[in-house]
Image (cartoon, rainbow, N blue to C red; front, side):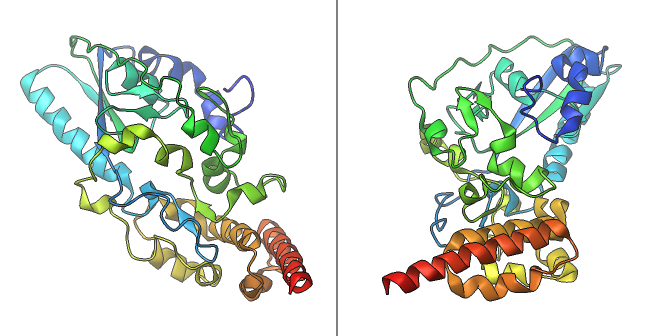
Length: 316
């Protein structure tokens, strides 16, 4: 993955590769790693409404409260209990905050197996869950690792809108919609923009089609449920957001992390992909933006919509 350059601009992956390869490299005193999973399975089909071209699609995990603080608080509670039961030992708690290879550890701990989309899959939870880890100096008996239960299924590979899953369990992040809309700061390559569709923050296509989800129940944690305005938000409305509106609308959600400019870029790509000429008015004010990435996205959207309007006029 890193050797092939598939990590894109996520330079921290290469910089901390030695720590990622082994928990002992991160904390030599660790004798066991406890891996926990918490479901965020949606109540309704995840891709419901994605065909509405005037609306944006936000990944399920980002529609509610940011999970990091919720999961970490629970891990710390368990860690305190562990220390009370085993005085003299130490613990370290991680929730996507350290160079930890979560998915291989999760498979080794029996939580699930790494699916062909590279995400962890559980026979009980499907693939809608967060991971957290407790490293401890307490030696614990290991659990049996989970086997592979994907069989010949390749739904996730076929579902990827940009062909980012280049082979089974091999993901080129540079083509992944989640990477492009969240981690990638510059302009998205033009060849990949149509594949974004109306996905303005993340992508769930490969997760949503996994057949193991049929055994998963909706998440019990209410704070993961979608907030008003995060399921199918109107693209024109999002394009008009200013900094104050962005901060108020997405406070406490993972979306705040990417900032207004990047969200606006994504929204403009979605407007360009909509094929709806009436959305040109929402994109036009940004064609002269001081941010060159936003301005480029707006001009691209306007060109696409002009082409769509021409086609409609030619067939009318």
